[in-house]
Amino acid sequence: MTASVGAARVPTGRGLWRAPLLLAPLLLAATILAGTAIGETPLPLTVVMQTLANHLWAADYPVDGIEAGIVWSYRLPRAIVAACCGAGLALTGVVLQALLRNPLADPYLMGLSAGASTGAVLVTVAGVGGGALSMSLGALCGALVAFGCVVLLAHAVNGSAGGGRTTQTSAAIILAGIAGSQMFNALTAFTIARSANAEQARGLMFWLMGNLSGIRWEDVSACIAVSVAGAALCLWHRRGLDAFTFGADAAASLGVNVPALRGSLITATAIMVGVLVSKVGAIGFVGLVVPHAMRFLVGTRHDRLVPASALGGAVFLVAADVISRTLVPGQVLPIGVVTALVGAPAFALILVRGARR
Image (cartoon, rainbow, N blue to C red; front, side, top):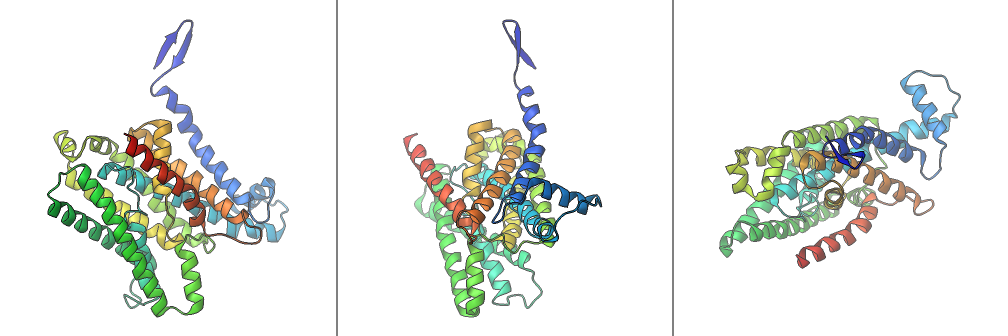
């Protein structure tokens, strides 16, 4: 669709989004390649490309064995998982902010990440499940339990206050999420202090702040699967998410099956958070910062916001991972430290803007 301005014809509407959508895969690929090339020891992009060609297409480029090992066994899976985690966490932020109609909703603030961390630590350190539960399944159960506790507490607070079902309910859920997050963080710390030795405790505390150092190829498939499935589910329910802009009652009047939509999306959110946290630990503020930035760029319609947030989250977390590896020479920082340095000021800005409205 075009609109004429004098002799020129200016694209409008959907035409403006065809080029960005086509460029999105290229931007994602370029981001992953850059995250693979840049690190403690910078590698030429030609080395990265030749290593990929040798492994993927059985080429025979002469590449130093050490450099090839760094690219293929360490940096490339790390960059792919960082992109998947960034996309998945950003999508969970989009979903929670839409369903709860609260700009502060985020898996980190809602206690999902803390609950997933507790579940993973209980399985790996305390031996809960007797070996029958995997770390990912423990993290998933922890995320579901955490969100259930948050919802129950929010309903109890709102019911006892006799408040309405809009602003007060939304605020109660956020406050309940913060309380639940602190409770599960305390339970995680207690479990580590009680059951882990000194070496385990040090590694777990580093992991809890977000750690991609232990990522290998066997972790990549699960992260890709949950991120792609989560994005597809969000796009499938894009119209329902748009309807929630006006509240649950308005969405129901527009023909949306509110309980089914909420149930499926909350379950998908918990699964994404559980799997991703079990791989990389709790990384905060991605689900808070990225959706707001993308709304500023592409608007509030979820047919645009969902893919934009997934791409923005992937780029953001790969960039944060590069910074965590290069900011302090000779030392790798937890990636959660970098995201918090960006997310905390953004959180304050959101609060200030919300107070002025």
